[in-house]
Length: 437
Ligand code: GDP
Ligand code: MG
Image 1 (cartoon, rainbow, N blue to C red):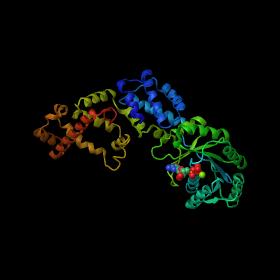
Image 2 (image 1 turned 180 degrees about the vertical axis):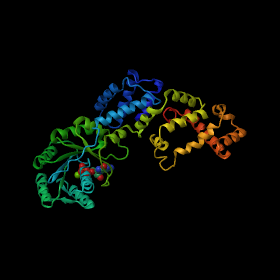
Image 3 (image 1 turned 90 degrees about the vertical axis):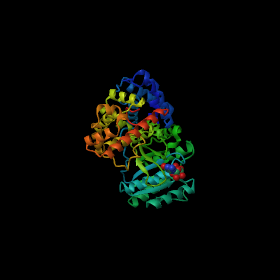
Image 4 (image 1 turned 30 degrees about the vertical axis):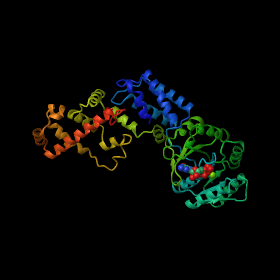
């Protein structure tokens, strides 16, 4: 992910307290590559990183977070603001509102039309009419008919009529007669942008004067999405974008490219073939998806507020030298406590959230541990190996704990140190908490 790449780009610069021209230059390249990997158009990735470079230079890295983590946050904030900041509502007001759906063949227009009708019916309590204006393939009409049946929405079909403009006009008449308040016109697409297709959609547009024209684009088409969006926008001046097939690993860089190129809001994202998987577009979520991270920015913000940089550096050194002791453990616990709810914090670390979802971690869980450490002498805290069985008995008494609890904790601590040793042997160095890299 981008976070990993930035970490390695900054590897030789640890200890830098500030983001400088030098380390920005090193990382801007990494950010650009990560964006291109997430399917952001190359030219746009370049312009974007130029902006980030300006914003980042001179930013002070005040705490235990690394410059790379701060960079990730700057990049994310910039992505969010570029993608519009807020979600943009669909305008479905009219008597009836007319929504024209356009896009290449296979982009997901018909599937989206069904999802949108379902969404408007269920979420907005509207009464939609679907219109089959793809007259070239009988299968396309049949597809929409079946979708309509599944969601309980009427479909306007004219199997013998080959004129999509007439069909659209007839459908609007039918909607008025039947008190439908929103008409969704599913049009024909072709495999590539061509004049015949554009003329046809443009003709429907001038005949029905749509409330919204939604351009549907397959997010997996990546780099090409930009050119397609531009061609459709030049001709139709559409009002919004729908990103489909945002399933599984698709990173969604197309969202950024399209918004950047045509400056039209993305209104919906759609994934999967089930009819209830339509989502309003949220720039914040998309930015996280593009960067491939958990909620690392929130973690960075909290860490920025609470972690002491010097202390974290010392700790890192001790872990690297396999000298992590009870005094460090206690300090680390105090830091964590300052930062708030322990489970919430752990859940923000990418990859950890899911693993601990069902485990009960209470903030009290650490109280007993603290009592045990408090009963150790400073010498014992710094030298865990001297703690023999008679010292354990004394510690148990002092902390009001059972000897078995002290033994169990000592064992856990040993395991933790073993784990740290192993992480130190790993090529990238294991990562757990900020400052423990
Ligand atoms: P159209 O030619 O633009 O009308 O595209 P269709 O709606 O017929 O979709 C083309 C293919 O993509 C069909 O096999 C759909 O089932 C599939 N499809 C559409 N939307 C999605 C989606 O969001 N995710 C996935 N995985 N498949 C989709
Ligand atoms: Mg279709």
